[in-house]
Image 1: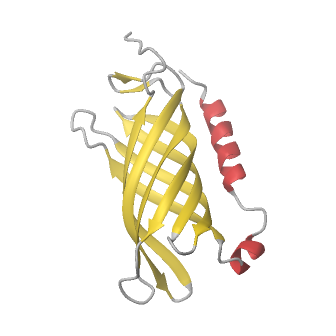
Image 2: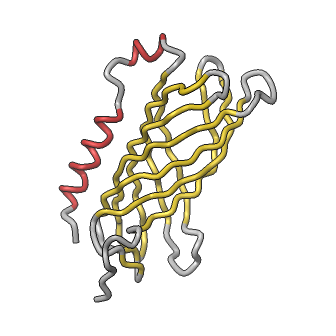
Length: 173
């Protein structure tokens, strides 16, 4: 089992590198911005019966104005509860977000996808073994972005798959 202090240290480091150096510069720049997100979920496989909380800090950069394409670099921390045990997952993921034409004023729809590298505090979830502390996450989602007063808000659905990618042999103990 991975040391929980090491996982917390890695999570702190990954979130720190995702934070902007100056929020004032970002507030004045329409080609980049910082956001924080929180999500809750459950495993789609009923056999695993897990609950998750995902905390994301992301830096966003406009790639093209015409195509409304954005690059995102996310630092994420996921807390998974399975069998009354807590599993921590921390990582970094580059993402691409495609903005669709506006439906109404200040209502924007988008699709996003990406993949990242993560550390996990245990080598598996229930009987699903990863074989090591490094795993990959593949993500895809869709959502809407809207404004409430002067604050932008997102509401989205994201599919997230965790896997060792077949690089590390799975151990069955």
